Amino acid sequence: MTIGIIGAMDEEVEILLSQLKLERVQVKANMKFNFGQLYNSKAVVVRSGIGKVNSAVCAQILIDDFNADTIINVGVAGGTADNVYPGDVVIADSLVQHDVDTSAFGDKIGQIPRMDTYDFKCDRALVEKAQDACKKIENINSFVGRIVTGDQFISSAEKIKHLNRDFNALACEMEGGSIAQVAYLNDIPFVIIRSISDNANNGASMDYKKFAPIAIRNSTEILKNMLINL
Ligand code: ADE
Image 1 (cartoon, helix red, strand yellow):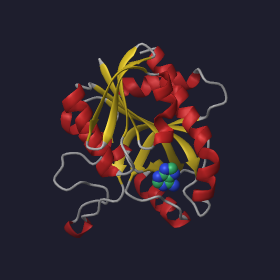
Image 2: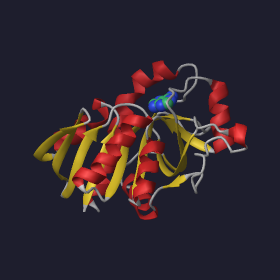
Image 3: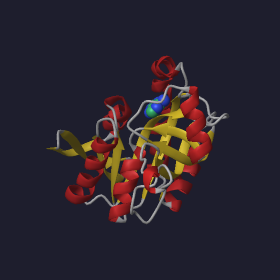
């Protein structure tokens, strides 16, 4: 088993890299793939860069060049449900790309035209393992539900309302949905684990700066607990 672990930003993979028993580094598409042992699992840890294209390219390289047979994405997200606050964790059970819009042809917003699925579903067993890992950590509120992805940093109350109402989203971010699409196309099990850094409202960028470090620690700790018990 080789687990591909993607974080979008340096801060999101920093702790993981410090724990990785590094065996080999390979650079492709301007991304540094760090191969080694992470808490007794064979893993490749990589910073994809921000957004859907970067993360999709990264996921496909993990599958093609490193034979990753499981993909886990960790990082931060904006909370889009009323009861989801900074520091909380959202484990995705499904992902939708909220910025896909071919409604002119009668498609639902988020539907990728001519694909046989509307949402990309995370692997049940990985979701359960992530939930178990959360339970082992004190003082973490965790949720399982939909995360939505788009090439936008959300910072408006109107937009959150739309994401929550139209997609039933608990959180929004900028990479999970495209990683999910690549994993789906390649039939690879995956899970997206995000910790909340802001509430995607007017104060989002300020909250983000304050809470992102705490949120990153939370999602990294969950991944650690998950890998130890994998
Ligand atoms: N990642 C963290 N917070 C976010 C937000 N508000 N919108 C999109 N991605 C995010």
